[in-house]
Structures are given as C-alpha cells and as structure tokens.
Length: 318
Ligand code: SF4
Image: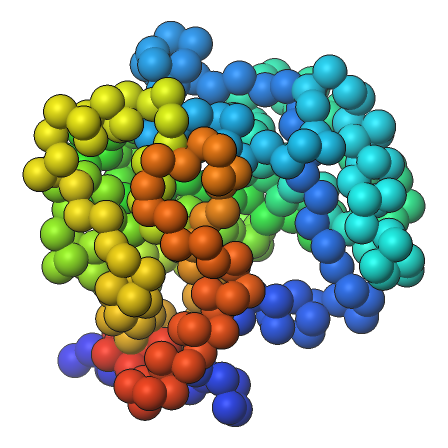
C-alpha cells in the first residue's frame, strides 16, 4: 500500500520562499543579473514553429542595461555596476533570460556560460530555456559544471494542459516538459519552472490542476506569473476579437487564486515569484501597479487571514 506523508514547512513560514532557500545555500548575498547573449528562439526561426508563443513580445522581459550587441563580459560588468552601489560585496548569478538560452551548438554555449563564470564575483548561472531545447550531451555538461558552481535550468512550462499549449503555439506538450525536468533533476542539477496562471480558455479549476501536476515533478523552484496582455502580440489581437476567451483577474482575485494554488503545491518546491512585471508601456492589461515585493506582502497578509499555507492540501505519495 502507498505510504502518504505530509510535509512540514520551515517554522513560521507559510510558503517556501526561494530567497530564503538561496540564503541557506550561500554565505554571501546573491543577486541575479540578466544577460542577453543574442540567442534566438526555435519557435520564431522556423525549426519548431514560426511567430512564437502568442503572448510573447521578447522586449517585455529585457532590462535596459542588457543589449545583445554587448559581449557577455560587458553585460556582466554593467550588471554588477548597476547593483553594486547598494551591496558592494555581494555575489552574482548570471541569468540567461531572453529567448532560448540553450539554442546553439554545445561549444558556443560553453563559451558563453564560461565567459560569464570567468568573472570572480559570478558564482553560477541560471539558464532559461524551452523543454524541447535540451539534450543529454548538454545536460551532462551542466551536471559537470554544477559540481563547481550553482547551475539552475529554468524551463518554460506555461501550462500543463496540452490544448492550451497548442492554442498558445508553444510548439511542445506537457510530457516534453516533464521529461526535460526529470532528466535535469536526476543529474543533480537544480530545476526551475515558469507557469502562467490564467491563459486563455483556462478556467480556475484548470489553473489549479497545474499545481497538482507540477507537484509531482522534481522542481527546485517555480515562478508564477499572471497573464499579461502585451502590445504587438498575437494574443493582444485575440483579446480584441474574442474577449470571452480571457479571464483577466483583478489583483485580489489573483491573490485568492494564487493561494488556492499554493495550498495544492508541494511545499518542497520553492516559490520565486508571484507576478511578472513587464514595462508599463508594453502592457495592455491588467494594470495593477504593484511591484513583486508589494505583491508578496499582500500574499503573506492574505495567507494569514485565511490561516493557510503552501501544501495544506498536498500529500506526498511514495
Ligand atoms: S516565449 Fe520564449 S519560446 Fe515563446 S516565442 Fe517567446 S522566446 Fe520563444
């Protein structure tokens, strides 16, 4: 018979905060700096699809200091200069964020990651990618690298529902994401995932079912994002033509949805973000005007009001 084990969160915590997890991993303060190494994306250049995911306008997640015309070393230096007035002695993780940061030959990828790691204040890399853009050779390399520096591979899952993935033109299904995450974690490499809550044609129960499914995966951390309608995207056009496909939550509705989600989420998976913050000039809706830390405060408050916590309705099956 299957043994069912409840999991305990650390004392006084209502959810497993990724920042706290990082504090326990590093003696020093750690800051991520975004690097745009000039990758493209197989869902844009034709190898997996064309046009990209329907919500994607890649400008929406590239900080100003990060431009692909600069070398990786220049971007690392500028990123460090951007933050060092606040914390001079902190260390950094190079965050390869824009587009698909494993979409090149292994030799070129190694050169890019290792250029960032050659800076003495850079203690690791976080590599954002699609689950259909990793292979055994690359994961073996990350496994070796992770023995000496921090390595996290952050996968865009977006939804666990295959109909949704097709509708948003992701170019891969959920099984592909499961396979990539399991292959990464079994090598001892940290795994991150990105999910969008509230994609078109997903009702609240479908959104919550994502928590049940990803709770079975060996994930280190997750980023949860509200759906944002971004200018000059396919989705922005769909919203004008078919507003009935969309449920753009108010901030308070989203907070309650998030808490329902967190209650079903495995408490061993750390939560890194609750919302995305695209530049206001690019956002059509929703306009909440809240920064990530302000939102986190509201979540904490609401968790207390509802007297609930991450994993309240999760049971580990072994
Ligand atoms: S979201 Fe990522 S995978 Fe999708 S089109 Fe944009 S860069 Fe490519």
